[in-house]
Length: 198
Image 1 (cartoon, rainbow, N blue to C red):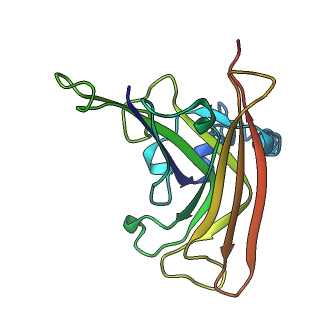
Image 2: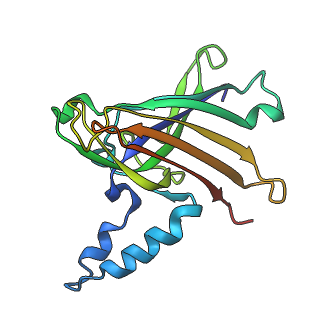
């Protein structure tokens, strides 16, 4: 591969995979979902996210030229602005997580005979990489139409850095801010561990 692109989008509560606990063979196990939700605020979850669980437009967080980058380029901070999907028709959606994924190109620049794109997008066939879900400590209601209790956008930054102690792990930082229609500011920050078992 010669190019890697990292994307972010806002996800609904369902993107965190907690809906399973609402009905476990006829039993409501919401307390387990709440416990898992609280425990997840410091861990990045790698799991498949259905496209319908994305509630914002997708933005590019980082593009890496794999042919020219240095090892230090793997550590970065990128700013983003998330807006509601144009298909939401002005309805409000709660953003409860940030969903991260990547595409890797074997582009025509290097693979002239057969360029290929490997995508881990929720819109592409599932891969073993799935997507990475960062639960938001404070969910934000987002609406293109605004409203007293809704924001029209979420601004933030995501940082990724190689973990110094575990060479196959990442530390992911997330900061975000939204201003609701009534002037209330919702902001939070978190650091998430993303580990690969050796």
